[in-house]
Image (cartoon, rainbow, N blue to C red; front, side, top):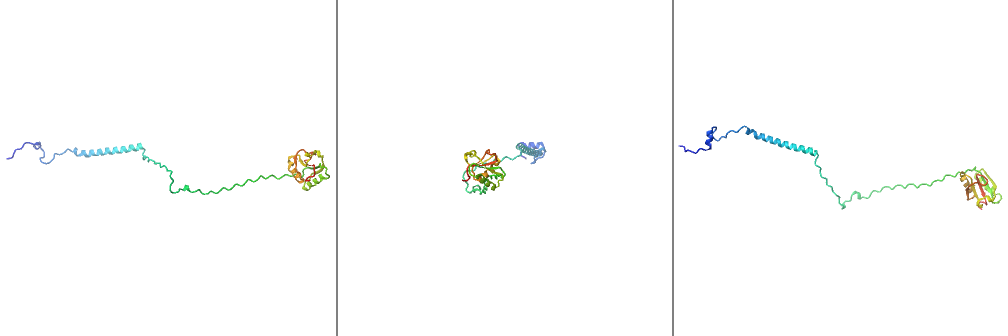
Length: 206
């Protein structure tokens, strides 16, 4: 005779019907679909969030890489052990050629007018003195000469002098004075009206 037991939870399940034994009750269909669906939704949301974050970072930052900080190195005053190229002496440059010394301004050739009117006037009282000086000028090439006398009172400073009336006769008067050995040459009105007059107060060269 079986021994009676108190009614327990298993007796309640058996009374409800259905499979009896170690089999579990069947699960609803949505319990199998819900976990992968939730995993797919969560993974999509995470991916969308990451993509949105990266997209906003590119827009805000302009897509440029972050600037690299620049490090400024200050050179020290200590000389380096190895000589640098700047320590070498500069190459000797060619010395500039000295500029030629300016040549002295050449004086123009004197203009001698051998056909100028030249009068030799004797105021020294020496016979034939004017003729002798006239012959010297004729031998030099002068073609328009004359010899005559003059009062010694008309000779300035009582000294031999060659007087010419115009500036254009300056070279000619200087040549006449040089040939006759007379030092004094002046531009002034001539006593007798000739272009050039040689006034003799004494014998030239005496």
